[in-house]
Length: 250
Image 1 (cartoon, one colour):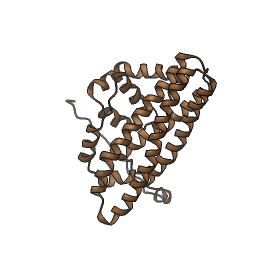
Image 2 (tube, rainbow, N blue to C red; image 1 turned 60 degrees about the vertical axis):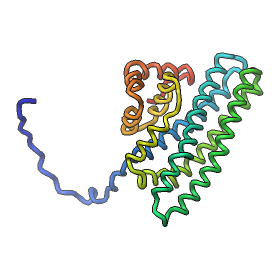
Image 3 (spheres, helix red, strand yellow; image 1 turned 135 degrees about the vertical axis):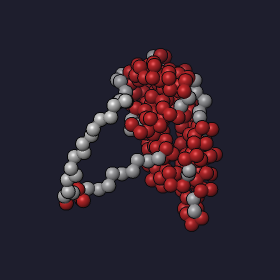
């Protein structure tokens, strides 16, 4: 702008007793904690939705079976990869960064995480078997086994992520540097097709706050970011409607 505008500021009002009583605005989570919580929310939501959708699905309709089991496969691959990144990069970096006085407690929490996630990983592989059996058999029994597997996984992931977000996730923002987290995030991208990348981006953005949405878009390759803005959002909405019978929450 070439012209200067004259601005007037309102006269500050004295703070009253109510102003002093208001709690401070909570600090939003940093990139590391925000990423973890967004991905956990995707896994929890999609596994529970799959359990509900499969329970009502026709047992012998190949197209519908393929849609549900295909989505379960995508969620499982993302979650398995997430656990591998945590095992190989996130928790080792955290253990190297925490003060010596806290190391034993963090190591114990990571040990508990390891046991819980090993069980979840086994359940994810069992779900893949149940999905193939449903596709081949096309029976109500096979469908119900798949739905039960999704629901059991949703319950297990609910419990495991609640504990992780209580005991470990807050420590990431406290002890990992921004550069350290960026290195982990860049090296840990899951291998997905461009279409799958757009679907996962949409799933992650669906329940995310404005800050996390901006971070998610900033963290994907430029080609995916442009594709999302041009056609990806619309295609994601259409894919969700086909899968769920309703548009995404946001």
